[in-house]
Amino acid sequence: MKHLLKLMDLSEKEITEILNLADQLKYEKKNGIKHHILEGKTLGMIFEKSSTRTRVSFEVGMYDLGGSALFLSSRDLQIGRGEPIEDTARVLSRYLDGIMIRTFDQEEVEKLAECGSIPIINGLTDYCHPCQVLADLMTIREHKGVIKGNKLCYVGDGNNMTNSLIVGGIKMGMSVAVACPKGYEPDAQLMAWAKENGDFLCTDDVLEAAKDADVLYTDVWASMGQESEAEERKKIFRGYQINGDVMAVAKKDAMVLHCLPAHRGEEITAEVFEAHAAELFDEAENRLHAQKAVLVKCMS
Ligand code: CP
Ligand code: NVA
Image (cartoon, rainbow, N blue to C red; front, side, top):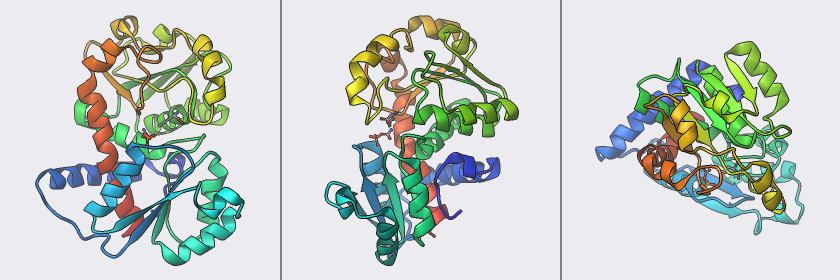
């Protein structure tokens, strides 16, 4: 695997191999086993948006694997002043062994991979969030034993998270149901692909989507970059919330996931959040292990 640009580029086998390696790395970290797999290697981490989990887990992940990481804010880089991504890619390829990038436009990530000569890892774009969904799949497998055959229900905005959950869920044999308000559905091409390749439903009815779900997932109503729409979105998305009524129609042992940060009282109630904190923080922890597996696959 050279890059991780989006989950659509990976096969079920490749995703399973990443998850298996992530489980192994998690076990080894818990047992104090040290690694030198990426000794002498440096990952550049370009951030054009805020981050807690992605930034810290990639930095610690590189350290755990014997390498190092550089935090590069677009505010300080010349990209922020208009230097073309093509030139940035060619320059950074001369210094670094890999780049993790969080930005707006998916095309920027694809261009970085095309013009540079080092592995590129997508740390979130407006289109998708593949690293998060690898951690999510790892967490589902940890808690449910298997991924295949489980029903995943996503409630909320058809955003970057939804796009990656659809691809990851369908590729791994889950049934995927998405509940979004009309006009806020996920990517149309991905939905068409999902219908052709698995069991997929998109509805505006939350309870219909959540019925008999094994995994309930939600994300913020306004993503990074949509701050100016936040107030309007609060009205549009009211009701697109994981709450007691939604839990009541899902399976009794349904787990609840959220990429975080969460807005209690909006997409999830405080009660549901706290009742499922064990899963939610395992999910956040698994960002570290899943990404270490991605770093090993791309950079070793
Ligand atoms: N879930 C996630 O990507 O979190 P951060 O925005 O904190 O990196
Ligand atoms: N949809 C959210 C995910 C944050 C991890 C955003 O893009 O802001």
